[in-house]
Image (cartoon, rainbow, N blue to C red; front, side, top):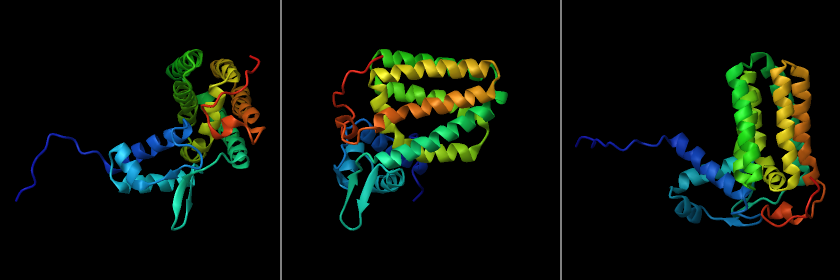
Amino acid sequence: MPVPQSDTPVIPRSSLRETTYARLRDAIVDGTLTPGERLRDAELAEWLGVSRTPIREAMLELQRAGLVVARAGRETLVSPLDVDATRQAAEVASALHALAARLAVPRLDAVALGRLRAANEAFASALDADDADAALDADDAFHRVLVNASGNAVLAQQLDHITPLLRRVERIRFSSLAGRESAAQHRQIIADCAAGDAELASKHSAENWHTLDIHLADETSPTRLHPDAPHPQETP
């Protein structure tokens, strides 16, 4: 018989895999799935309304990103925050974002500068509203302008690989008063870009990513294991 025609668009397999990965990644970052929690394909598939295949594919990506750990033939668990691995990833991210800024500045036009300003305004508003998730999205949008403008696809791929490992620490930062510093740092980067100073933009981009270090100092911090746990008041 002929294949029935349908007006319902078919979701590309790659999009389903990416969406499943993003939802699981975000659930780990925001603490919905807690460190040490056992992840069962069937339960996750039911929760997300997908088959087990994209769940398994997403698990492989999450394992490569360092967000889950698989014990062969036994179980898959949400990874605890590995301080050393996260610090190393932050060092690489700092260097790559510095390079992105250096390459991007000569290529930026008024439209791209407008996107930087709009992203930082959204970022500052999210911080004022104590919305760490919206702040993460806006921070990603800000840095993505420079990464895209750099014209370096390999740089972008490397950042895609290591950034998920940093998201839990970024969320901790954006949930604290210390996160307010990032909006000011972004404004300095924008000023550097508007002035056409690639070296200063690179320097300040690197410094912006180095600010994650403060949240990696105490390996036993409750916020390390539970991003939504209360944390000590910090001096603005």
